[in-house]
Length: 102
Image (cartoon, rainbow, N blue to C red; front, side, top):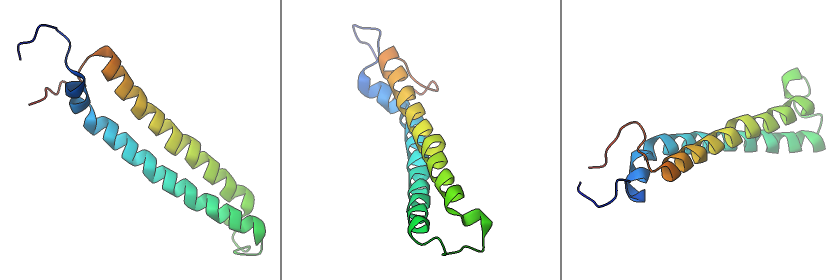
């Protein structure tokens, strides 16, 4: 590719990092769904504490902690890393993983 500038085009940078960023965003959405499921279950446990009361792992405090932990460490951290990877590639005008666009 012969161009006047030495920096790649933004489309080329996006093309080079699409698999890494897409995988991280897909995984973060899965963790968001898991967090949502545990959050709904914690809300149900708050209003009906007798439901599944014989299982110690399914008490309100533990389910609520799992919900917030999966949201913070599963969804938010992976989404932040994906956005950071994309921003570093975009602002640095560089390719990721040495993938040249076709």
